[in-house]
Amino acid sequence: MIIGFDVGGTHIDGVIIKNKQIIKTIKKPVNHNYLENSLLNVLDVLVKDIKPNDLKQINLSTTIATNAIIEKKVNKVGLILQTGPGLNLSNYDNEYVYFIDGYVDHRGEVVKDYSKSELKKAINYFKDQHLDYIAVASKFAIRNPRVELNIKKELDDEFKHLSLSHTLAGNLNYPRRITTTVLNASVSQIFNNFANKIQSSLLKKNINAPIYILKADGGLLSISDALNSPVETILSGPAASLNGFLALLDINEDSLLIDIGGTTSDLFILANGVSLFEPLGASINKQKTLIRSIFSHSVGLGGDSQIKVINNKLVIGPYRQGQPYALGGPSPTLTDAFIYLDQLEIGSKDKASEAINLIANDLKMPKKDTAIKIINDFSYLLKKEVDLVLKEVNNKPIYTIKELLENKQIIPKSLNIIGGPAKLLKPSIEKHFNLKVTYPNNYEIANAIGAALSKQTAFVNVHVNTYKQTLIIPELGQTLKVSANLSLKEASLYAYDALKALTHQSLKESDYEIIEQNSFNMVDGFYTKGKNMRLKAQVKPGLIYKLEGKVNE
Image (cartoon, one colour):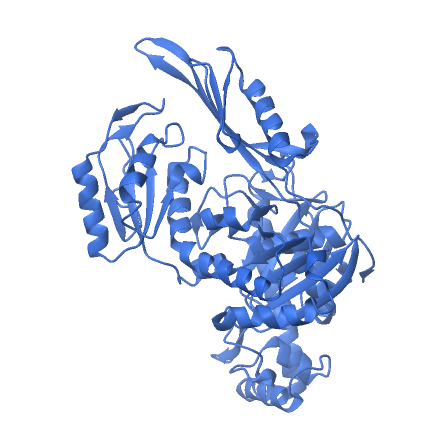
């Protein structure tokens, strides 16, 4: 049995799956101030009458890191930069940045080391600012991490957390690598607290199964690995949504997928049935990272989005102030409109009527017309946002998980929706989008299904120095002797074999992918003396199997 959890901004969704069958599901409100209690309430119902030893794996997705970044509820970070010549980052947008001298060149040679006295000044500066979370980024650390590793030795006992850029991304985009490193440090504490609450809640139920977190690319990361690189879990929630769609539907055309949650709606786009991909890395809150990610777009429209009237105009979202008015919340919401219209039987009908009346009075409209207008305006605003995203996507090269599609224009043939309000919104969305709209069975907890059925990914790094004729695979603790003429393609075969050894699986070549690779000549004087290569390979993200079934049209 596998448990899938989706810990969203509004609800915790849970599912137990065994042999392609859904055994049990649950959806409960989440209180992030008392997250452990919320989790225990879910577990009380979900694992009742289930033997703990029958649970083989716990997979979960979470918006914890994403929401913390968007809401700016993260730790302040001290940033040490070693930029070297040729790049001016003096105006880098970080409140606490300290530049140190020295540099590693593009060949990975330490041309000039940093000054220990200068590093000491950086330490004192950060301590004076009461900073405990530090990011370190040397420009060419991915080609020689020695500087970052030496700095780590001197800072390890001084601060609570250190993030080193070379451990988080192997690509050469230095500004994106800096941002990735800073974000990793900034969310480390909040993610650590979240992971501890998850583990504590499961242990209280005597559940000792391994725990995995969904990454932004749709693959699973062990919780211990996620503690070292929590930035990998940004957009974990959208990744679960996409996997939920793919697990429940069979789509082979250009299509729109929308997960309508309580706080936001997440948009995904399929090209010929294949999801779009961010070629350089995920962006969050306008910050560009090197985190591999599926393409998604979040809109501040959800079932519990605050609704108010400003200058005689109905305004929906982008914020959620709490539960719907009918459930004791402070503001009218879309959910209140459905309750008032007798389309949803939760909470207090009288309170829902009161909520709609507040809006109706401001708009000077009848209450029923107001409730219908709320639903229609919600769908209209969603359509308007989707049109903008489609226009942007179609104005640049389209990358899918499988390939680059040159000169491809996305023309959606269908629209598929999941999330709590999906069924109720279907008629209105269909009218505004003028597309066939479907939602699958179990649409309310599709995210949890997506998390449960996600495939565990593993990765290996391969470092090659053809001059020294060495190939190093840190994850296996191996140093191998190789030919001085070794090519990148031959090095990738070593990565493939290493993945098989690491996972104890008989992988086919189609089961893995090279996600990072670079090779450059090492020069001594006027002569080339071999090549330095770095590759990172992983088992491809995906689903362990699908649960395709009936869709509702």
